[in-house]
Image (cartoon, rainbow, N blue to C red):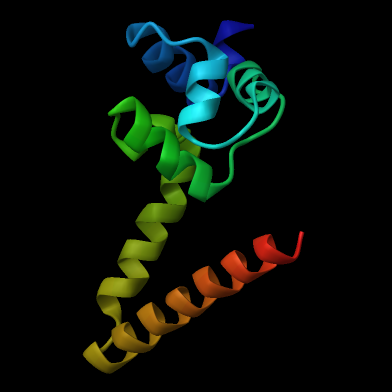
Length: 111
C-alpha cells in the first residue's frame, strides 16, 4: 500500500526521477549497487545514515526528506536532552559521537 511506503523509499525514487537518473546512475554516484537502490526504493531495506547523507547530497535534497515522520521523535528527544546539558557535557557528547563515527568507519574497513 502507498500509505505504508517508507518516506526514504518515496523520496529516493521521486528525487532520482526528477533528475532523470536510472537506479544504476544514482548507484554509481554514491558508490553502491543498483540492487541496493532498488531495495531502498521498494522499502525492503533501509539505507544506513551515511548512505542517506550521500543520497541527500547526490540528489540535492534535504536529509529530512528521507526520514520517516515517526523517527523525528528521536530527533526531538535528542535535541531536548542535548540542549539541557551543560557546555562541558555537550562537548563530551559531541566527542563521543565523533568516536562512534570513527568506529563505524573502521568497521566498514574490516568488511
